[in-house]
Length: 528
Ligand code: GDP
Image (tube, rainbow, N blue to C red; front, side, top):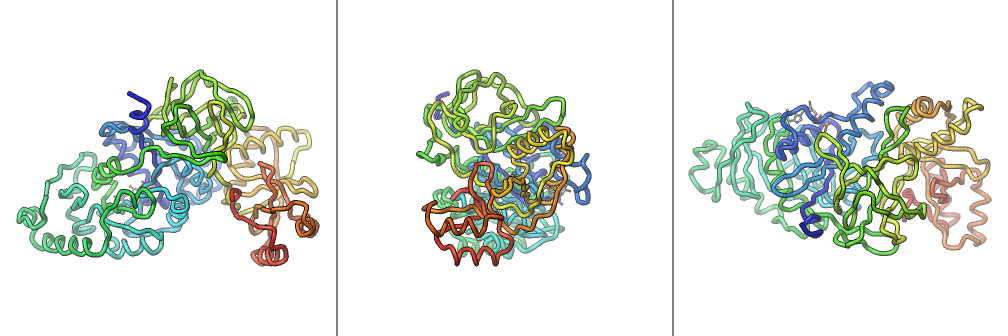
């Protein structure tokens, strides 16, 4: 197969959902279609159960599972589909944001009873900002829930999307009869008694066909005809370009648990979801079909076994073909590296591979060379963009509690930050270290891991910060900037990339600072 054919086979996406909407269940059913797994229960849920947030064993378990399910690949209808796992738990949102830099499209799962939930809103916003094409799957149609039209409205309003249904439910909950597949023009009748079997569907080219009345009863048939008429009047027709540009989101209905409506989703996904896309660097746009390999690190996972300190760096291949044992250029470190045992990921295992193509994810065993956002090329010195840090929500000083172990602490903090567990800010004034996190849970994880993996003891001290603001200034020698630095010196810090950050203690301070120093721009994201 040629390079272009290989790349065009690939579809790499992420499923985003609020916890419990059915992401794990849907993933599992998708893998069943690909024949990648034989039975349900093969995909482990990676969520932290409620109330277990301080249970360290639970955290460890979570880390183990999330390695196993980080990337799940399967083949379906001649395509190679890579699913990237995105933790739904809000304390791991940062991890999910980064994973979304490596997907070419996304499927948004929504619980029909709960509608649009908090995490869905945040994650969809990130996809919208990046113009990632999205499909929406309304799940749990076997349960009582919201009216389909109301839900479509809710999705439009709360998620800011422009939707159009490509499948439509017939009844809901106790009266759920099945799905009309608008995309392929057929009907799938729900029996609800065979969760593993892939159900058969009946072609219905024309809804006026009386066969429909025989199939679902004339009341449901009339209702469906009316609803489809209404849909045709209200929602725009599906348009490939609009979907690809992130301006139109097709909606599907079903029940993941009953493996119902999933095939409709998957078939449409295979037809329309994008192949690997071009990506921006600081120098130029890199196209997937370029002959030379390039890729970037979007995730780093530590080994759970403290005796084996190696980590797994996940690289999304953006262009060309990756080969085992070939020399590649690590741009940030300005050095060549080769990889003797690169891993590729399959549904339930990882394996050493010889080659991989744009769209794929490869895993490298790493002893500390990589950091999230690092770029690998065949020699060209560009860096991929779009892997920004967001302002954390929580901030605390971190202190060394064991003076004999300061080196270990230093190294531990350094490596955990490379993994993206949290963000480190070093105050300019006194070099004190401040750790910023998305959720309070991370502080426990860090403390625990420092102790168990690096034999270092850390304590925290409160530090009242509202937001980290990355500072942009045109003239570093201007009077205004020097004055800003003088007035705010106690709150100025450097992030891991040595960018200047202003740790503002309140929204009011941010406002005041902007008013007083208009030439100093403050950003809540590290890339601007
Ligand atoms: P995740 O947190 O998004 O990964 O959600 P899970 O896939 O773990 O599902 C959460 C719960 O919803 C589990 O108990 C599932 O069995 C259940 N569930 C998932 N899909 C459906 C569905 O279609 N119908 C019903 N009734 N329950 C479902």
